[in-house]
Length: 200
Image (cartoon, rainbow, N blue to C red; front, side, top):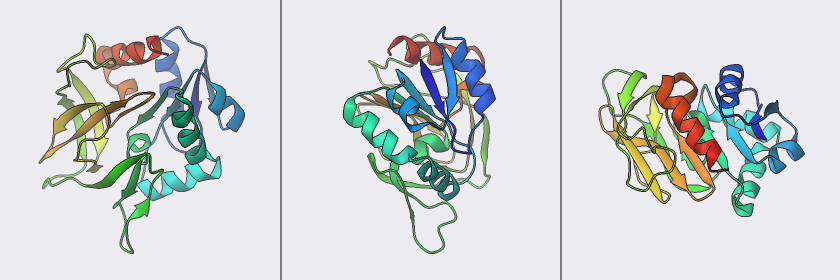
């Protein structure tokens, strides 16, 4: 079963429909036990870093994410759900960086581009050996964001560019994350979801 974590942020219904195409049972849940024990957990995210962290903590999602990683249970972060896995983020951070879940080192910062947000389709360059990009190497995916991580973390990285190079995806053992929205990325996104689901 794939659980989509409901913490008040994310395109829950579109994510649910997209992941259901994998053939797995899919449940949207805020229940700690269900989220912790699911075969795969999806952490979606739409909005600002601090607000998403607040919502995540309200359902102990930060603890669930760290515990799943420690147990080697597959977890996938999407958009802000990727960003909050880092140590900190600078979105609306007038009084200092906001603390993230802290699984990956580094800070999520505003992209160095004259026009923000970065919204629309962009190509992604992948690392050889990727599981999730098998069959969709160098395809375009759908992005909506103004902030991103720009330093490599994890075992495999995928990169895109908008004003500067940024991390489009990370694969790090049981933990995977995409800055783009696979559930909004057409056939390429569904193939990526299928690849991740088959790895569970």
